Image (cartoon, rainbow, N blue to C red):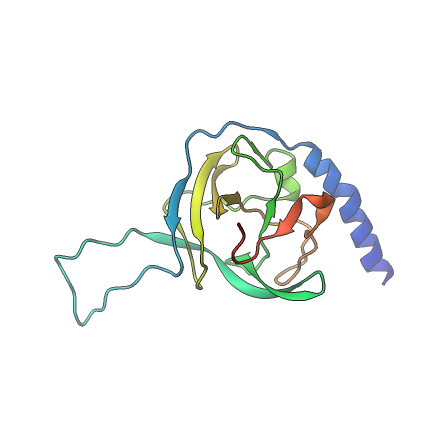
Length: 172
């Protein structure tokens, strides 16, 4: 119990230092919005359709999983390694967590293509060009991981400083 308390205290002491580096940035372009609920359909090899247009390529960058958040079992967004994704309620189009802040809250980035999901995720997945690069958004919220999460299912970042929250399905 002492180790867990020490780790929690260290998280609380280090989080403000990482957040203090969060600053204003100006996005270099607008968000690219692509509604998605599943991975793109795959054409059947038995019935190819040469006249059908090719579907836009998507890259699975997240999935939905169940995790305990504040004592409740919720469906949360995770990256492809199963790590919980978060959003910051104070983010704006010109102010995202970057630089030192991104050390504690690594952004979910996609170098090219359209973000997709390996499981059904209602809502809009997109990217926005910001100080971090092409950052993935869910329903217009830039997504991040929390460096102090211990692995899949960990939600230690929920509620940190009253601005960081687990990204759940239907986040608006």
